[in-house]
Length: 246
Image (tube, rainbow, N blue to C red; front, side, top):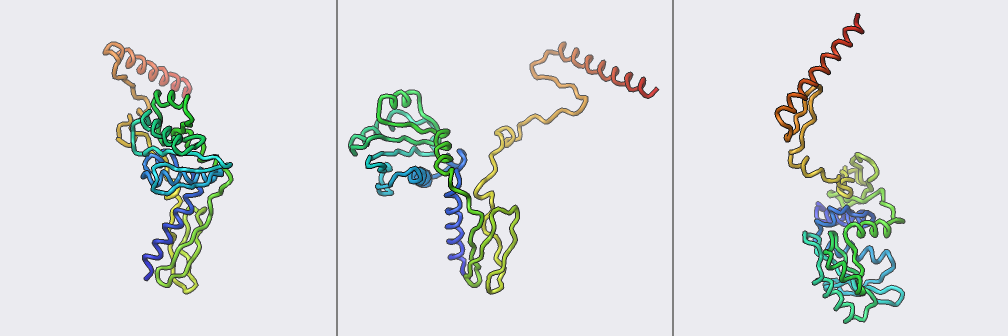
């Protein structure tokens, strides 16, 4: 059996396919710091930057047109907006590296004080909205591959599955073994999360036809007027119907 090799190929193919996609903002915010840093590094690479820093370094150091840049990636899971303390540390790193500019990138937002700080410092702020736009721009010429490889766990042969089909079928390897699809399209493009109220089951159900809607803040007198008005409408509708039948 080739369970380990097949699983490794599957993970490699998922990573390859995801490289051609822009993660949704919810996915960016749920990433680990290392995964988020890899997404940013890939974006900078597509924009023509050369990564010259060590993967374990606190900042991404890149060069473009013989000029040096320092990029700081905020922790995606931090709910609080990025503040001036992080920008001051990035500013110091830009000066120490003799870089031309720094980028502070977050999947969330910045405090007003941080925005004011960046106005007079060699730092560009990229919040979640700007990051998604930049990722889309960097991938504008990259097409999502429509096929991927899967390994037969019985003999190790490689078969090719289609990703652009809603439901791909198992395929036979060259030795006649059946190899089921290993990647679903929704793994790469998950559906958008539903509204919080819907997820919590707190959404108000739609009223039944003819039902009288009673707002919570409506007084008893107003509710009675609404009920009388609804009954009058129903009586008028019945009268019109009877005239038509006659």
